[in-house]
Image 1 (cartoon, one colour):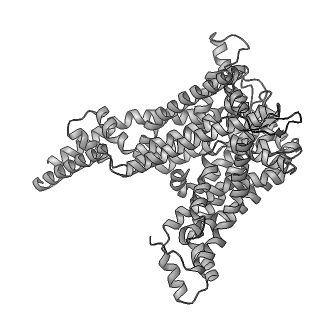
Image 2 (spheres, rainbow over the protein chains, first blue to last red):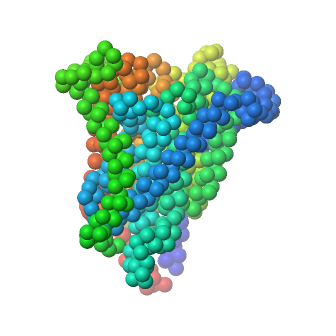
Image 3 (cartoon, one colour):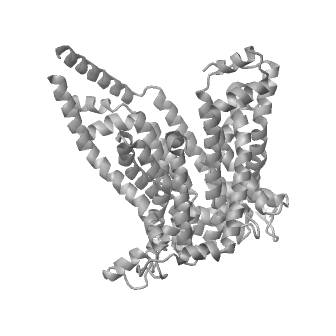
Length: 273
Length: 310
């Protein structure tokens, strides 16, 4: 009897509790989504005015048929995102394996340096790279953007793969070695397959971060190497543009698809970001 | 997890695995930081590059009146936005952690978080500009003069900064609250604590590491913000980030930009160290979480009692 009462009491307490925090949660979610909803709605608006005058797909038509500069910027973004995320994934995953299982010189130094690019404000990373490249007389362009993106992606891959390695049992490798596997065989047939989710989430995270970055890219970009965020920035500095509304709709849909694909590791990602 | 050290062969392998990333970060991250550190002690020459000898003039210039105002503004905007983020995220993170639909709620938080930041700022411009929908609504209600913007002021900067960085405080808070044992709250209530006391004395001390992580991950990017004040701020909204960009790209005063960067860098590093220290000390039992443990024991014995009777 008494247990029942206690449970009911707790249930009631929880409900009272939930209501305030739930209201706040709903408020926060509204706050997060209202700007996005407004942008998406106006991408279907006939005129540039803020009165909703009628439904149209003309901005989408313009986006897909008459925006060559935008698509050139998008191609640049994709190219940089692919190259930098692959580089970062390979280097970051290797480093995570080395640091997890081996002892060597500068091990601790690498660990501490690998966290820094994540925590320093982007402006600093951008300025320091700009000054570095210009002091070496390296021409700014897609190459410097690639270097910069790889640099800020490395820590994320390293962190996600390290987290995955924590769950990996080293005795599996010992077993493989005992059965006669070479170092390379045990790496490719045992270690990599079992940490693949970590590697893939690192890769995905890198692609996202690279496509999304504005500030660092803004510093290390050169003439003719606009990425998509830089292009959008140049368009919105002087006001509202319906084609960008249409683009936003596509970007938001893409992000939703990505988040949906990652649904099963969202909790790990939340814990690591 | 047992960790196997040494042997020369193993030592070599560790280097083969880890040095490529180490070297990459050394060349493209550590050395550039060292260069701005060095530059901050030099002066600008007429070609927009730097010259010796070492001086502190860049640091002295930072504390001139016009930059002092910017520094002060950056600090208050950072404090205000961070506090607002935390006040909104604490209950929101709590509700998420207690919800049965955690994955869906995380999805809802992640979508705006992962949406391109420039697009999100653009969305706010759509809402706030003089032709924007919010201004339009207020104008038709007669609350705002025709053609007036809601942007280009510090309020808009704080609003959009909170919008941009609130996921950085929701996510760590959600993660720590999710690990919290909610029966401790019930225990506190059973011991006669009010709801408010239970939250302040039991929940908050136990999620201290989450709070400090949220604080740091929100405050650091806000402190170094560039795009938000640039796009929705006015002439009186310049922050440190804007000064750095202006000094690099327009004035070509690299020593001054470097000095500002060094200060920003040091402030962030101290913040992170403070956070790590705090996370470390919350692992060693603080008196407050011990108090929670006692209360948990009381709760267990309560349950034991009731089980016996049932």
